[in-house]
Length: 623
View (cartoon, rainbow, N blue to C red):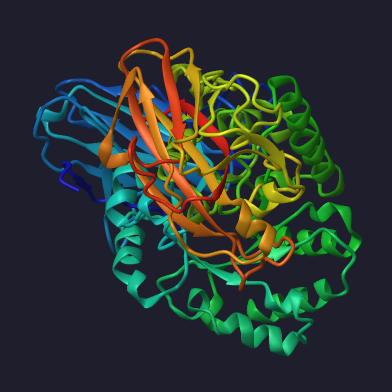
C-alpha cells in the first residue's frame, strides 16, 4: 500500500501501578454509559487527567481526548481502560510530511514497534490489546506535528473471517492481502486464518502491528466422540497451537445441548492449558446458544473462567419488511442475549456476536429476498448490538465467512465495523448512503405473484409462464429452508424468435451505481435429475443506464454441498448460472429487458431449452 506510514516506538508496562486496586474499584461498572466517569489523578500528570470514561455505545468508550498545543513538544496523560481488551489510539496532526513521533505507554519498551495506519488526511490509528487498569500515554512530537489531537477509545474485538478464503463465485475476488489492505484491515484487529504456511509473511506483518491472528479448526472432538487424550492430540496438531506466531485456535462449532461430549472437550482443553506450547494462547469456540443446555452451559462457564472469548453465531436471514425485521431483532438477538446473561451473569465481556456474511445466491445465503437490500439488514443487526442495553459491555463483533460473500458485502461489513466498533455511532450507516430496506426498484422479482409487473412478449403461444417447484429455493442455497425461490419465470427457447420480458425500474438516482443479480437454471435438467455445466444463453439489457463492463460477468456454479434436493447433492450437481451486472443510472426510471436469445437474429443457444429465472435483485451498489 502506497499510503504514508507513521512508524512509532511503543512502550507498554508490565508492572503493577501503585494504587491499582483503587483504580480497578473506580472502573467497576459505569453508572451512566453515555456520561463521564471522573477518575482522580494519582499519577500527577497535570490537566487534563484523561481519566474519564465516556461510553458512546455498548461497544465503544472514549478514554482520552486531548489537544497538544503548538510549542509544547508533546505531553503525558493517564487513562483508565475499563476491561481487558482493545484500545484505539488516533492521532490527527498538522503538517504534510510528519517525522516519526515517539509514543509510549507506561514507560516500558516492547521488543518491536508497530505502525499507525493512515486513515485519510493527517489521521493515523493504531489498535492495541491492554489489560484493565490505568495506563500512561506519553507523546514526544516535533513542532511540525503540532497542534495534534489525540483520542484513545476502548473498542471491541473486530474479527475478519477468514484470510485466504476467496469467494465461491470467483469473479468477485480474490480477497487477497492487497484487497484486504484497501478495504478491510484498517477496520479490524483480529484475523482468522487457516494456518497454511503461506500465511506466515502476512501473519508477521499483522502481528507487527500488535494485532491477533488465530487459526480455524474443526471441532472433531465434539462431533466424533473422541476421548480426552485423542482430543488433546488433535488440538496439538494445529499450527495455531504449535506455531509461536499464532495467538491460538477458533473451533468450529459447538451447539447448545446436553451432549456428554462437552465434558471430554473441557477435560482436553484443561490439559491443553498445561502444555508449554499453548501458554498465552486462546481456545475460542464458535457456538450456538450454549445456555440452552446444562452441559453446554458448563462448557461456556469454563471457557469464560479461563478467559477465552466465545463466538456466538447469529445467522439471520432477511425478513420481508421492517416490521418483521424488528421482531426478529427482538427475538433472535435481544431476547437470546438476555438468556445468556441470565444463565451466565457477566458473560457479555467474553461474547463475540458473529453475524453472517452470506450474501451470494447460488452458494449458501441469508440474502433470501431480492426485494430487500441485505446491506441494510446487516446494518440493523450491528445497530441493535451497539445500542440495545441487553448488549452492554459486549466483547466483540464478527462476520462469517468471506467465501460466501460478494466483494460488496465484505467491503460493507468493514465499514460497519468502523461505524459501530470504532467511531461509536448509533445511527444507521445505511442512511448516509441512501440505502433503503426495500429499494422498490423492481417488483415481484421472484415471481411469487405470477407475472404481475412484467410485460411479456412470447415467441410462440405457451413459451413463457410462471411456475413453482417446491424446494428449488433450497437448492439455490437460500438458508434456512423457505418457500422463497420456489417460484420462477419459465422461458422455452423457440426457433420462431426470442421470448422477452421487461419491467420498468423505478426510484433510480441519476449518476448512481446499481447492482443487478439474477439466477438461471435449466428446467429440463431439474426434472430429469441430470444437469450439465453450461452457460444458459440469457441476454440482459437495460434502458436508462450504462453497464460498468469491468464489473459485469456470468458464472456457472453448482449447488452448495449442504443444499441437497431430490437427486442433486454434493456429487451430482445442479448447475446454475449466476448473472451479475453493475450499471450507472442516467435517468430516474429505466427498463430491464430479459431475452432467451443472445441476439435479435440468432438464438445463440439450444432451441427448446427451458430456462428458469428468479432472484432478480436490483439495488444501490456500494462505490
